[in-house]
Image (cartoon, rainbow over all chains, first blue to last red; front, side, top):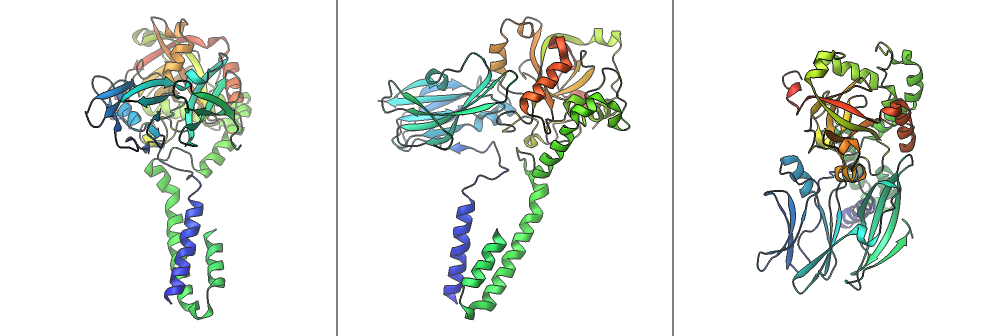
Length: 190
Length: 257
């Protein structure tokens, strides 16, 4: 009897796990993605509201901000705070690089990278590694899907030129050398 | 999928367990049925960012007719479509929505005196649609903002919704676009800093400019570029022109809903 119930539950659980691999068609885009705190628990991202909305990278031990960037919609109001709080934070496994990916609202928002060494942070924009062609009318980099290894992350460029259909291009950014990250174009399904 | 799985479960389990298994299967099927009942409406209630499949299919069917209706206003049923007051390029229901919008809020073609009393700005008319990249994750007029549109539609409304830079035009403002003879609700926004960068030095970002006014289109069967092409043909040389802010913010519709 117990064996039967266990078999049934196990089978259904396995099926549930398999179907969960696909993202749901409907989802809350404002849900927090990633984790604000670094894996080594030394750093944490917070959203600061005053006087304008900003993201601050806090050294947990001292409480000091070691980096900060303005939110895409900086005016302090409830709607912009909701947008700001929906940011995605992707830390690599050894807490040396973090991607800060604002919510992609019709190409609004930016993708930042921060490399950390000896308590200091260096800021980069995705566009510094992958220039956007001048013919592009609107473009937006997003993390898609995340870190592939401890040093390599995959990003997607959604770009649209006037009168043409939007296109997505995929790239790996390798931070093995944090002073000179390397970019490599890739396919959606390599 | 779940039903198939349950069937396989019943087959592979030992015979002695048939009654227990049948009861369990029955119970699970009952639960599954309950879940399916909930998904339809709950999507709108809970604030999904993507239209449901039926909405998409309906949208496609309506959008497929958009170009036809543009050439033949008579297709719009009882809705008066006359002269330039034909917005059907924005989607089949655009005429109906614009006229319902006018009726609900008592809006008429403005007189010269009214125009003189409204705030006039330089703007650039551009188009966006539900076929744009990464649509609709998320848009201010998506279902995350239920109640933000004048008719309660959880998504952008073809014929009345426009996206603006909220730092220049407050959300919910009532606009009048003379070249389209169209009243619009500024309910959506987008990549405003990119707009400003791209249009720097152009009239829409000049001293009297409010930036782009991005007009929502229900694409239907059209691609993103086809929508843009249709809109550009419709607007003609009026892409850079004037718009009027009839009322700043959404106070104009309070008490009328």
